[in-house]
Image 1 (cartoon, rainbow over the protein chains, first blue to last red):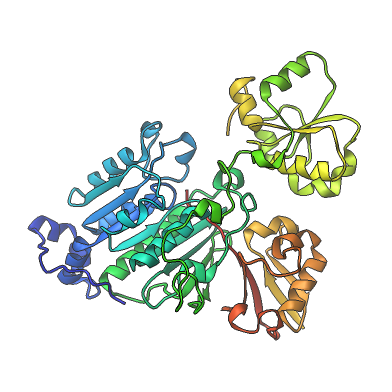
Image 2: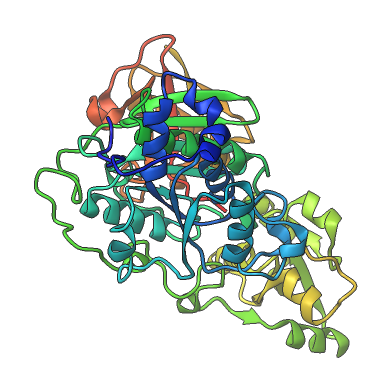
Length: 390
Length: 92
């Protein structure tokens, strides 16, 4: 399927012809194809793990206009995988960092920056200036937003997502193909699938998937090869297995089906069941919590408190506050090791897993248990600066 | 009929880290039942309280989504693979 990209008014200078010579001499590209790349407008949502290799290769390939959406700042922990950003960029807005590198690779690329969160209020307007949208975001609400906005705008959505060492890739929202909601009509409840910060991710994995996204984007622009429309590519990087399953267009899809019920963008946070910020203990859930300062005060006052650490053994090795280690997944089997008559403070890395542990323990009849807000990271930040953060 | 069920990463903590679980079944429904029978912690991640397969978890026989076959009554034969593919969102 070829998009209708008008390249009739595009010319390539002698410099550009030399730059792209390795493209031009291939029958799948040629001058005609390179002009289409130059005429194309591609929006990259997210300049992080997936967005980095995606934008780098699209710039190198000569995509004429790249839009970048990201409101975030480069963090030290990003450098393990977000290869657009260097050590010297830590603390800078991701878009500043990204644009420097992309322009250095290819000064012929025009870049449009959107220093903003993508929302239901701005998505359609932002998408209107682009031919293809590539989704490099990291949460379900935005993925459903991008999908719906692509279907409503009639633009293809080049999708990839990653988890630890597995990834998925597909092309949604092409005119006759399925959309993301055909594949997954409903999101998982919040907190069920950990983020990269909680679950970890193999640094190279977004590299692999981001380049697949760039490849699919280029194929769509050129009208070359067989795009991943109606196909879900499943990548297991540890086994280095690539599998494919079929994605069918759902005739009853509420967004792209024959009788759509979603005709405008909705509140995706509500759709995904998110209240307040993801990553913090849900204030609606009434999980008893204790701040690090209060916990320290009580320990210093000699209170007898049993500290339960629900992280994994390899995390305990990085740093610990000498808690009793029972990884969250083992808690149901090992709950008998805990004494419900004692005061227990539960912690993990940032307070998310420990909140689940406290919830579980209360349901198991423990009455004197509370969650250390912010986890060992908050403890390292505010109480004991000698502890490494990770 | 011995059938292999492929377990995706997010669910491996509940199958003692196994990526492939062997089950005995003639249908997808039986395969999943055997699977959660062997690994009960998996049940709440695959099924809601009323016993229905969760909508953000897709199940394939070879490369076909069971929603477009016969759902849980889809027959499985020897050398078929049942793959579980949950929704993931990581990108950064």
